[in-house]
Image (cartoon, rainbow, N blue to C red; front, side, top):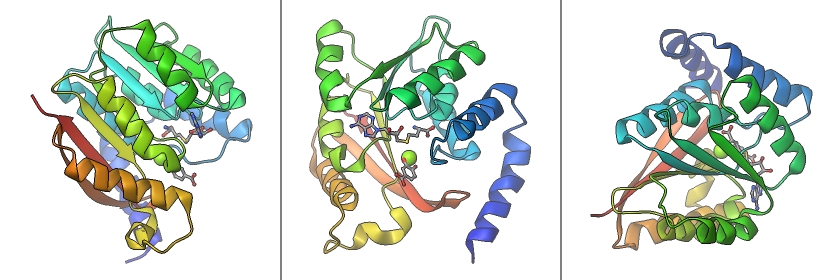
Length: 222
Ligand code: SAH
Ligand code: DHB
Ligand code: MG
């Protein structure tokens, strides 16, 4: 089985479940034109995030790692009228592209893109609001995944859902000897999630246009 097959099947599935969509297509085109890396979630993965947030009835979503806002659009579209996404992005260029993409998608009023290192902006988010978030998508610098997971727990309520992207990385995650801060951060967060009594969690491997990777998912126990 090859990456070409995985991609072909992703397109096959996408044809059924992810019809051409002007705002999403434009978000990718504009991100590419601005020189952003092509590392957004795939179309079918974006739809999965959207479905998870909808199944959950999420009203307040916190995303860590905006890039050009492709996943942000999927998440924001899962919200009820009064819902809100806060998305944290380190790179001001990425945030600027993302804000334009939100405006183009008609989602500017629902999405707040905050610029800065997430570990610097998370404390202010905690201070600003006592209202917890219902759903978290963690997809930024992987070395800080353990800290992001702790922040998500802190900003959560019983029943909140926490999704983490890129937890398999072509299988490299199983190699504890790798001198790679991203892999080490991911290994630590998986271990943390597995032994954290406040959540119930699992992880699943994925293949597709993004190669071989995976998601971890946790629910905060009631
Ligand atoms: N969620 C996006 C992809 C995010 S890519 C999507 O699927 O469409 C990861 C993003 O995290 C990049 O834009 C990168 O600039 C940002 N990032 C890296 N380190 C960060 C940090 N410390 N704080 C916030 N964002 C960070
Ligand atoms: C990378 C980051 C991601 O969030 C992703 O989904 C794929 C790749 C990266 O930094 O290479
Ligand atoms: Mg990712």
